[in-house]
Length: 258
Image 1 (cartoon, rainbow, N blue to C red):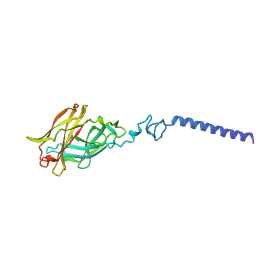
Image 2 (cartoon, rainbow, N blue to C red):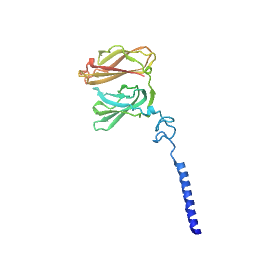
Image 3 (cartoon, rainbow, N blue to C red):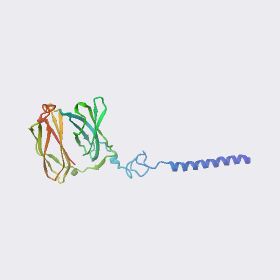
Image 4 (cartoon, rainbow, N blue to C red):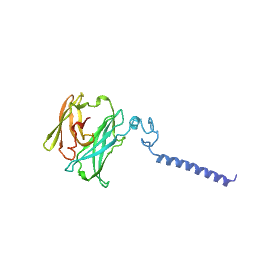
């Protein structure tokens, strides 16, 4: 083998070694740092992207809270009440800080207003949410939608133990009475738990004789003390749009608390 040939072979080998070393240095400097969303089990996770330094696998596998049943009711003066449901399909976890949005669209389908809120939803609970703050007038509304604006990964999930849920309920069926141009719905709730119930809400859904909802209203209190009782009164306008159709016997009342 000639000296020239040997130099050529050595040169190729030398360049190959430099290329390999250069590639290794480049790869080390540009490799992505392990994360909890890279689809790899590469930093002590129990499963891919969960456990260890990442979110608990049990929480990651939870189903998100869903929103459904959005509807709206109107009064003669144009005011609007929005109603919908939040559903936590999981059995063992409370969903806290669940943000939701009512979207109002006009008759052309254009979204003209958004109203937001936040709720805690207990396991397997269907929780009604109500908003009466819309600026859009009833006759200008084409449709209403309800959406969750917090993903299942962003919500705060807390392991549920049965004793954490306050037991607040109606003492007896509420009483309806007419007071001038208003309808008064009065009653009493009692907290059967040994701890205070927070953010107590009563959602009243008023229906016609066929059971179809014609209006909704709400009452709220910051808290009801342990084993305490609280009287409530819900005032709604005596409005021709729905009051003539309303059947008091068909009204349903839902009590929620935290």
